[in-house]
Image (cartoon, rainbow, N blue to C red):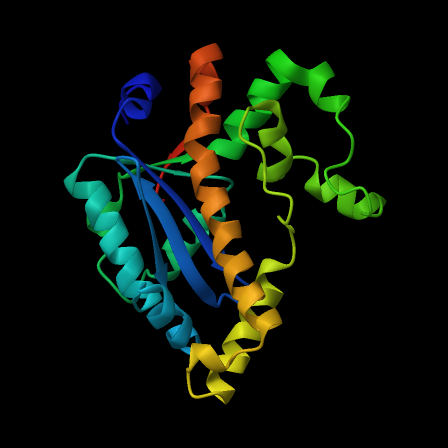
Length: 233
């Protein structure tokens, strides 16, 4: 692999999947060249895709297409944690993935932890819990969530950002759309709010990534040195 400085200065593709613990993928949000896009990956959300004019695509094909863009543009995939990389591994056996073996993957969470430890430890520890009503266990889990870490930057999560609720929101919308034959106009006001908030949540999670990357890069690029892997082992 090239030096980490060479890699992090390649074109970036910032990504965030919305999925549940069972492995169902609802959508993919990504940004490249300052262009943000969302693709629906759950056929139960067909009505949502139609209403917002979003492409609906099979998760395997959509992931393959994303990786192919990275390969063709010599880009690095940037995500928050290893979750997206684990999703990449799900397509092994379904598609040819050996051609993507050396596409680099930057785990921005790992870089952020190093950045906070070396430069912002006192400030970060002094921050209040991200969610004031969270219990001790939830507060620990949210401590280094993207929404919490972004408080060290100028890009703050919207007031209706609700970590841990996105899966439930998309499931609620999916079930309602199937029941109403994918007619988005027949959803209740609350169901439409769930759909809008789910998409908005994903948009923040993607658009926060370049802000966080640049904040770290401007202060200490060495924080990225041990946060890069290949997309596939």
